Amino acid sequence: MQENRSLLDTILSVFVPIHKDGYKFIAAFAAGTLVLSWISQPLGWLGVLATLWCIYFFRDPARVPPEGESLVIAPADGRISAIEVVASPRELDLEGERRTRISIFLSVFDVHINRSPIAGRITKIVYVPGKFLNAELDKASEENERQCLTLEGAGGVRIGCVQIAGLVARRIVTFVEQGDTVAAGERFGLIRFGSRTDVYLPKGCGPLVKVGQTAIGGETVLADFGSGKSNRRGSLPQETEPL
Image 1 (cartoon, rainbow, N blue to C red):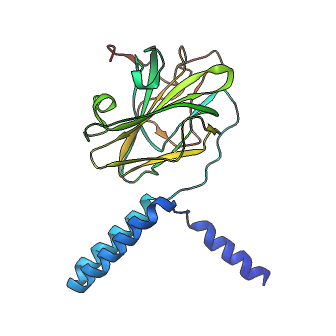
Image 2 (cartoon, rainbow, N blue to C red):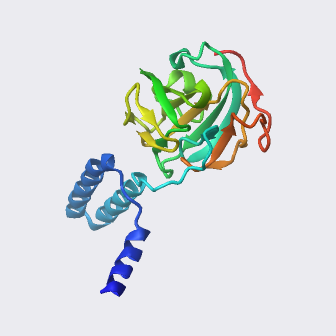
């Protein structure tokens, strides 16, 4: 009996949990597959592949954030596409201060669950309607549909986190509300189906990552605002004109 239980636990450990927001999409893909199978067997196999991709897209793996109240953790899986010093968006209510912005691009094959970069209280949430340009473009931060969150952490430090819809992504989902308290690495939303997440570091804080590096949401350390050190591993962020 114990051996059977251990075997079952081993099998279950291979499967990554699926976020509940994806169930209706998986069901729709599966229904479409049945229709395609009725029309043509080759089309049915294409539907099966599409359904498997949908299941893969909505996976929600467990993550273990590193300890340290001054650490800024990656809010999303993906490739770090840009590190720039820019004026903070007015929606974040950061007085327009120039801050280092780290942009993470999420392809349709990345985990799309967004996680809080620090432990703290959400002081502001603002939804901004916009376009659906390629999320890798610089102007996507200002022109695309987005959801802006401001978090206040240890010592009153405030950072900004922006969920940005992309060329394929058409829906930003947020699980939290203004005034909520979140832990570092806690899930706060997701974006369907391909997108970008920007993090505005605390004033005077530099990155510990580089452009081109792959970030793991809830685990990769982007910066440490309590160390007194910046750019230990990353290259100097590029200065850009005020937004």
